[in-house]
Length: 369
Length: 80
Image (cartoon, rainbow over all chains, first blue to last red; front, top):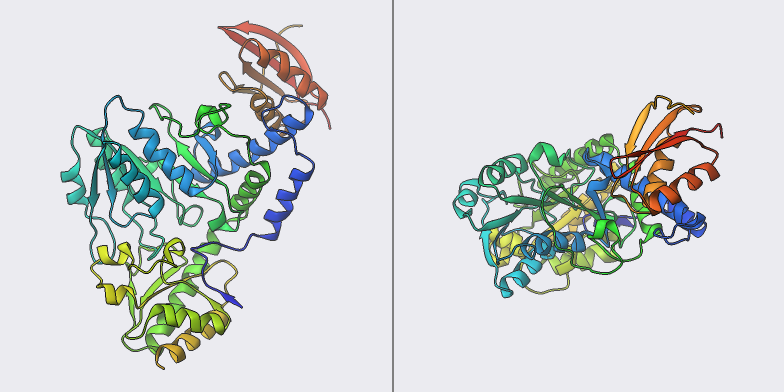
């Protein structure tokens, strides 16, 4: 089998699974003060230090969550619900549903929501963003790397804009964490979402970087874990796995994956006349390739690929089963028909050159039937 | 015992138990045997709970002193 759906999720690294097995011994509650509790707390703090180091922030600025979706919900609802009055939220039109939907939920609660559009590469329009910011704007949320096209957003420019206007800035880095350089302080991000299962870690764990100095309303209330921002007993095994996954991520892997991704694109262009890439040529996260085939339906092609042992997707995995066209591709100016002919091929550090060649040939054969 | 100069200081004020003990352990275990670590702790549970956890792992309390509203705990890293 050739797995090219790594933007949906990745295979856990064996070393991650080994780290998680430590929870068999350290099974205490990480909030208990006895020996087993301290051992579990120590494991959690080791993982927190690893995540913090990857972002060049302090460990106490990292809040563990149940994943990227919860981290995004905490960022948006945490800021907007902390204000005494309902504020204004600005997000990009190409955000993941885990940002779009909490934003719409906040809108139903009385917040004002503005969407900022993108160019044909899926990169947000900075001047449009600048015009949307008002005195009432509480938060701007723009993802780092798009989950469908890999397009990287100009975080530093957005951060500068937000700082000048006194607006908090959140970025969903679920697809880019450890793959692209990201230092929240450098780009002016106040909140950063991370996910473990996109980097060969376990599902069910993520984190939110929270810069100190502003109030965030928790969305889960209870025992006051994670500095009161995320109540609930720590998922020690998953957090251990997350820490291990971060420790295993290497910049050289990202460079290799990028070369393979570019090779796949080049081969597909050679073998499938009329095939088009979506997203910027260079400013893309390393593993994602979005292509629109000249004819046929992506769904049919994916089924055929699956029968040949190739796993890919038509766009975001979350919406793969949903019939409506991708909001990301539509925002970039593709027609519904073009969006319906679009495939997402996403590589990992375990993808090989032979797999890339094989997939290019299989797609070429199937797409031209 | 006279106060010994700590090589590093770890401020754990506001950090609850047992997270404070866990962070103190991680820091002292990263130091060379015999090194001295000063830990700033809140009064109450933290100053009661953290020293025994560190001593159970082989580190030695050198002294503790009131500091502002909390405590300065000075520990020497053990050999193991």
